[in-house]
Length: 80
Image (cartoon, rainbow, N blue to C red; front, side):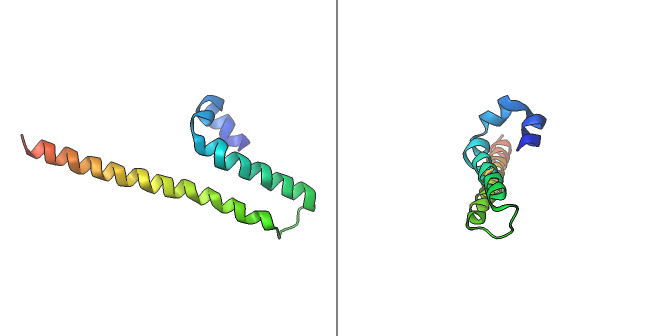
C-alpha cells in the first residue's frame, strides 16, 4: 500500500474508492494480524484478503463495457 501511495500519489490514491475501502483495510488488518500473532501463517483474518480479488472483477466489468462501446462505435461508423 505504501509503494502504491508513493507511485501514484496520495491524490490519485484517494480518488479510487477501492484503495481506501478495500485495499487499505486489508493491509492494515494483515499488518495487525502479523504483529499480534508474531508472524504466524494461519489466521481467521486471512479470508478478508480475498476481497482484493474484487479488483480483478471490477477490471473485467470495465473491459466488458469497453467492448460494448467499440461495438456501438462500429455500428455508428457503418451507418454513414
